[in-house]
Length: 339
Picture 1 (cartoon, rainbow, N blue to C red):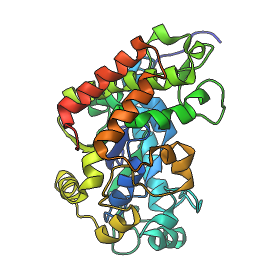
Picture 2: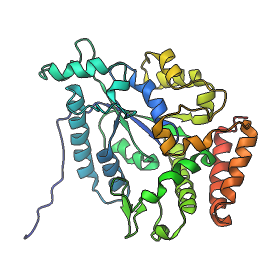
Picture 3: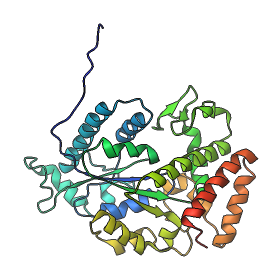
Picture 4: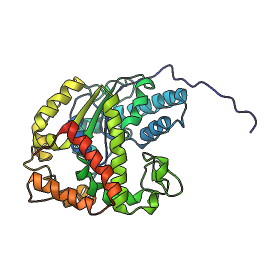
């Protein structure tokens, strides 16, 4: 191929819409919070963006040069922004939680299919699409490099949850890493260890599913703690207190974003909020798929917490459980207990 010329990539002209990044370890309630954010005028439909995730991870791991990331990220976001402004790639799958059919703005999104794209910022006649809404899976501290590689404003909202209550969710699908081609997490090594683990877990496949679940949660909590320590412009939604008393959190998000939500009462009813018990979630197939039905209980919060801890402790080695217990102590010191 001969000598390949190296360029300093740039994108001098860009749209750079504001970005809302809804992040959190899988199982922390992002799809629940998503519906409230989607109700805000000017905010585009929620989008799970694998390409955005992979670029961010590649840069975090030092596999993508900064100038290339800046140009590619700008191109990617502008393309997504343009597509949403004309409803080119909207999610019409009725069963998906991120489907536009579940949005109060669904008819506006559909009407955009028939409008001219001459004025990009005119959307639905009287509304403007000013903010792109991206949902990501446990990017956590890897998003910190976006602060100096993206030219628009970034607002991060982080969903968190006590690690003991993530165990059943992760146990339900952790074996997909390296085995299921429909699992889109970036992995390393011949056995498909997820990117967020250190190189010492390159033999990830040899662990039991119970051990894998706890290892993943524990390592992700270290990355979550790093984000919480380093990122000042961040709004945190701790699952337990949110589901028991959501109003203060919703008001806080409005202040954080400088935007007002719509349809709050109806969205609260749809999400069964507030709840008498943190485990009283909606009985949806997608939640049952990831083990939410195993959280159902008639126990008090305190007794349920103790039973859940004992169950995990008896399922994994002492060394592995010690990692999870450390994550639990970190969470409790920051957010407290809800009982």
